[in-house]
Image 1 (cartoon, rainbow, N blue to C red):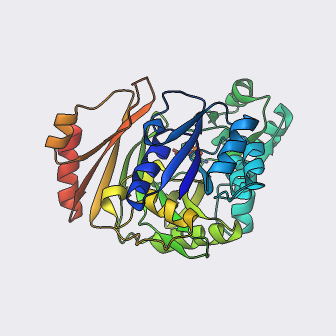
Image 2 (cartoon, rainbow, N blue to C red):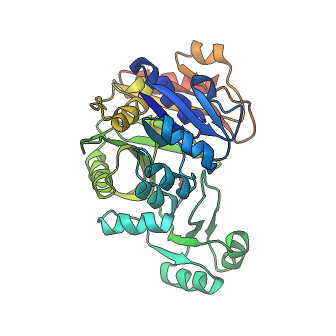
Amino acid sequence: MKIGIVGAGQLARMIALAGYPLEMQFLFLDPSADACAAPLGELLLGDYDDPALLQRLAAEADVVTYEFENVPPASIAYLEGHCPVYPNSRSLATARDRLHEKTLLNQLGIVTAPFAAVDSLAELQQAVSELGLPAVLKTRTLGYDGKGQAVLRKPDDIEAAWQQLGGVPLILEGFVNFTREVSIIAVRGRDGECRFYPLAENTHRNGILHLSVSCPNDPLQGQAEAYADKLLAALDYVGVMALELFQADDTLIANEMAPRVHNSGHWSIEGAETSQFENHLRAIAGLPLGSTAARGHAAMLNYIGELPDTHKVLAAGAHLHRYGKAPRPGRKVAHATVCATDAQALQRRLTRLLAD
Ligand code: AMP
């Protein structure tokens, strides 16, 4: 079976690595000649909206998926008209726009921060008077890793935030005083079967994910699964999805979804019976889903902007995944996973890895 992937970054690379044992072949569309998934398949080199390349992708792939949500919607609409595409364009359109996303979440009874659409300074002032301060102003589309957002703490910040972000559609969100950030990775097959990975607890640095620790038997697992289950069904979703959540008291507050495999699920390569990458492929290919059960406790550490010393990481008892990318500030270039049979042993391994 030939899998087409829009994008050829590290997510596409890890999807392909998971597909090789199943004898899957890969065709990537990416504008960068040195895209890091390229050595694992055939690269269609060009823009994500190149009509000739989209036509080839649709003609040659049995099924198409994508590794990031900023794919032009028109490209996915075109592909959908010519071959199976998972997740579907509605899921992508919902995930791309924070206003559509939060509106749907609330319609499904999933708790979010209060929010309001903002398209002018007057609307921002009105939204602040309704939601109060502090609040977070975000671009509705194209934001990632904390980019395209500003925290408003005092009335003076309103105008500055508008200067910084205004001019594109925005959303103002009430500030959530969370105790921790978690995410749930879920997968839904073509036949509608859903499976859920154990929650991961996530720590960010400079707006970028730094550490994810899997939480088998977390007391909030059921609440997170109920949210994800509703969302998957409402979107008739196929493939892996991530839902990022805040915990405040004993309630989970949904922040955003990613219509793809997710950095906070990388631990599943070694830490779960079936990785998120393999389950994504199984789902979109119409194959039986694999068990999402944890094999024990696992934690994943990102390397950002600087390549790790392979010898040191391996000597610390970790598994290392280098993405084949040249280091640049803020760029994810590798991750390491540590596994253990209990939380204390995991912490010891993690401390050793972080010390190196
Ligand atoms: P996002 O791009 O929505 O994932 O936001 C990036 C980070 O900003 C999150 O991981 C949180 O740490 C923080 N953040 C986002 N939205 C809120 C909010 N409404 N209240 C408090 N913190 C937030």
